[in-house]
Every structure is written in C-alpha cells, then in structure tokens.
Length: 195
Ligand code: GLV
Ligand code: MN
Image 1 (cartoon, rainbow, N blue to C red):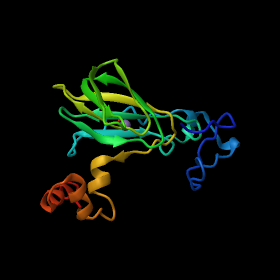
Image 2 (image 1 turned 120 degrees about the vertical axis):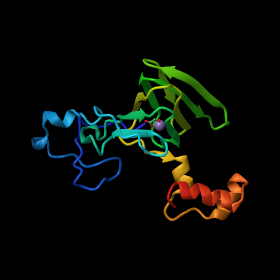
Image 3 (image 1 turned 60 degrees about the vertical axis):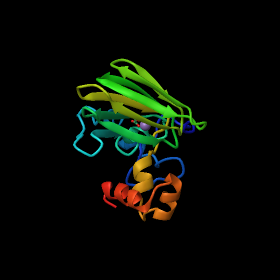
C-alpha cells in the first residue's frame, strides 16, 4: 500500500528524522551490499510473556534497506498455546506462511464476519489491510510463522493493549460502557497489562 518509489532504492538514514513517507536516503557513496541483507529473523524470539508469543520485525527501522520499497516481514514465534493477540495493521495487507506447528488463523471483516482456518507447515493466508486478526497455536508443539506486508512500516494496533494499556489510560467510563461490564472488570483487565 506504500506509494511507488521514484528511484532504485533509498536506504534509510535512521539518524535523520522520519519525514513524509519515510526516511531520507543515506548518501549513495555510503551504501554497501550489507544494506540489502538482514539476518534479524534468523533467531527464535522469547515467548516467555503473558501471550506466549514473540514478534520480530524486519521493517524499515530494523532493516533500513526496505525504506520506500513498500515491503516488510515479521517472524512470529509461538509457545504451545501461544497467542498473537487480535491486532490490525493500518498501512498494510498481510500475508503469511506457517513454517512449523499448527495455528488457528482468523480475521474479522468490517461487517463482523469471522473467517478462520487451522493451518500447518507450508500453508498460507492473507489478511486484508486494516482488518483485526490473530493467530493461536493450537498444536502440542511450538509454532513458527513468517508474515509479509505491502508497507515498509505497516504499524500495529494491538486491541488489548490499545484499549487497556494506553498512555494516558482510556477512562474506565468509556470502557465499562463499550463492553457493558462493571468497573471492577475493567480494573482487573487493566491490571493484567500493568496499568
Ligand atoms: C501477524 O499477524 C503479524 O502481524 O506478523
Ligand atoms: Mn498481523
């Protein structure tokens, strides 16, 4: 979904501040082959957390060679039972391929239709841009997923943390009304995210 670039490449100068549609290009004479390779997705992420999952991003910030090219990837590791919680990417459609394990993968349309399937190694999915989606490890073993995006910086709005762990917090009055529960329930949920 990113706009088309007007040059072969524009390796990001991360020391400069991001401006409209990306970072400025680092000077051509400083560009090397290393700018076009990245090994940050080779290592398993740490899944010791409340969701039992880990996302490692190869986006413009970690892999500056992607700047302006309209593409990026993630590595997602899952402990048994691990969940990549419901989230959406405001700037990209997502596709992915399961490398290892068994994942329940689903998204919800803006008409509230839920599409889902259990996938195993080699199988792919697509999540249309901006729609809320998740992956749950339903296998006995750990699982591994690689995802790809048509943006160098897809962004991620993670439903539980967006709603219950923002800074400053969303007033309880909003959340009790939105979810039709009492304030104690909202406080309990907020406490799980340390806020
Ligand atoms: C999976 O949903 C991901 O965003 O990598
Ligand atoms: Mn996603």
